[in-house]
Length: 323
Image 1 (cartoon, rainbow, N blue to C red):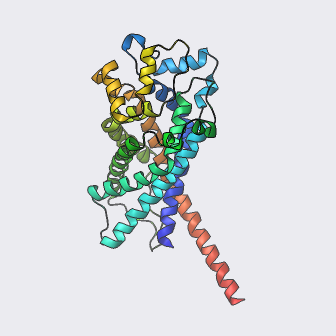
Image 2 (image 1 turned 30 degrees about the vertical axis):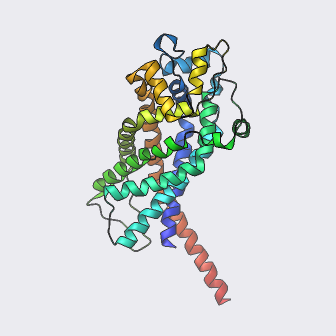
Image 3 (image 1 turned 90 degrees about the vertical axis):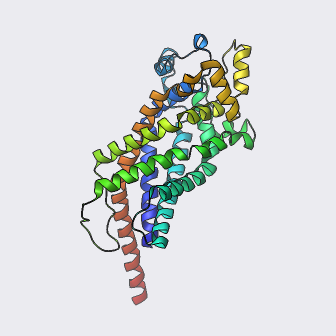
């Protein structure tokens, strides 16, 4: 039971952390995604920078549209983070138990994180595709989850699955770096409690925030070209009137990774692969830092509550047997 308790505590705290951080930073995420999805020559760009997306929402009186798709994104974030943290914690504890080691090396950490990430992507890909389409729709024209998915086939709901599986290296790198830095930071600290049911060690809020920011920044820089291609593949079609033939062709190139890479190279050049990198780093660093900060603080509370629940059920069962 102790094995499962820590896995559930990790999964629950990670999912709650994702829910809170996603909601707080969602307007920034919408602006970032719409900016990344646009692929045009420099003299034809609608958005010169990410702030243009924000001002468009204000000028068209569609500020609330910055939250379009929030429900779907929260559902996807909660499910994906729960599966990821549960899988990561489960496989990590299983490996340590079978191997007899006290810690995991970097290579094993990457494999465990990638396996947990792959399972997560396969389960939540339709939600990821739907949320991206909602965010990149014209302001005020976003549709609901079911209508967004039902407009195409179920195969289209898994658009970008291949590149999403490739991008499992992003959280793998992030959490590996975070875990290694965390272990080094906690070396020399003695646990206040002893026994098999002692509470796991936790970082301070500031330390978790800082380590989360550093680890996510590192991972985002390495994988950004693939991140932008994924947004292009999943983006909604442009409904603006007066779309020219060049724009129509650009929409047709959003279904495969190779076509997305070619479209960026032809219209924006090599620097186009890093268009929106600053916004991506700002959003993902803040999001991941908040997630890990909240997770670190909630994990201890969740652990205590689960231990209390276990003891309550055990005492209740003992009393029933005596009766």
